Image (tube, rainbow, N blue to C red; front, side, top):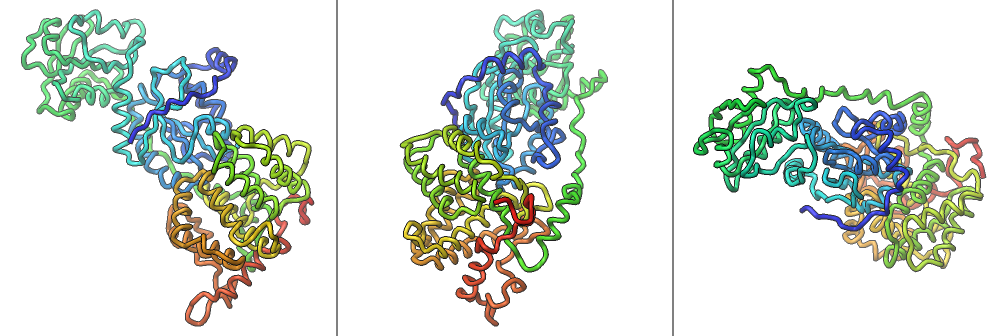
Length: 568
């Protein structure tokens, strides 16, 4: 299903557009874009995949300035669905490299803090999201683009064919999918390809019968040959304008002097038409633009520098520990990335946000300043009946700016990964949520009755979590596992534990599994010998005892923070 999006974006700052108009060519901004991606912030895609990673600064001018059509994937690099889609998208993008004259392919990682605003403005509600932006929009406000709601490469390609072939022909040299007019002449068809500036030496006139797309498909497949342009002829009488008999013409190749050359496809199929024209061009020693070279996969060991190797070695030691660095990372990214990405927060969304921040405020593992921040944020939300993601972000920044040293670790420890894009944020969320269920049980506060934590988590996952595949699974699991029937704090602890183990089982051998940290039914026999009986059956009381000890805030390790005592 393809859905046009009509909601307007805020006006792009005129100064930014003017700056890029003066400084950038229409295409080659790639070096400046990719220079901002550090080793620790590798993208799911590279230029070797025919995908350019954009960000909040480079996306707007790219959409406004470039002549080509654009396909943009908005993704969250931590999202399993995005990671599983990446090989499919890479294959499609590499195949469409031959369309580079009319289509450029980009990606934006909404999991990066600097891209929160742009992903919010483009109203990205799930990832991966594919959006098409027409070349007709060059120099205009681009709008939100058109959704391509599929991860099937055949469906995506089919949609792109329709989009690019329906573009308006409005500038010289631009690929023209429009049928020749009845008054077409040799002069008029070469008018778009001036001899002094265009490499086009020949124009292939391809007869396209009614209800056929053979001319369109021939044009697309011959894009790698810059020396030939393809024009579609629907009315065979037009061939007479070039001194030809209108009847029985399929393909005629015309040069600038008006010489006609005939090629004879073996049959009336797009493949045969393309093969016959390619053979003609090869006889003239014209070569197509070469395909992308096969890229060499990076060595996964390069991801682990000495510091990361030391952290992995520490984390793999027994007994298992929980690290405040991971809890900080979870809350940092929640406040600065996940929650502010929502375009408008009202109604059920606002209720879910208030409940989530309230639980965070009561069960806050941060230092003293971090507790002040979240408590103040919780109070400030009571004054809103409706707010935007931008307003939420402003509120967080305003409250945080006078409070130093809240998020200083800026690294994962217990949730560290040995490969890019694995574990990290999603692991830290599970850690935080488990800690909340345990701390709520310890507090026994009337403000946090049993089920409150799970309800808050469910609201966040349903309305705010950037991984739509994860969100759908969790909501289905909440219904099936009857989250609503939780009556005690211990049941709340066990419900989340059971749900987590179900997810682990589903993701065994998945592309998102870290080989150093395989998905297991937790806790292992090594970590909790009493959690199962002799028949390998879980012992609920022992599991609760183990989890309450493991996730107790008093037992959390400060390893990986700036000082061994943290920085309270």
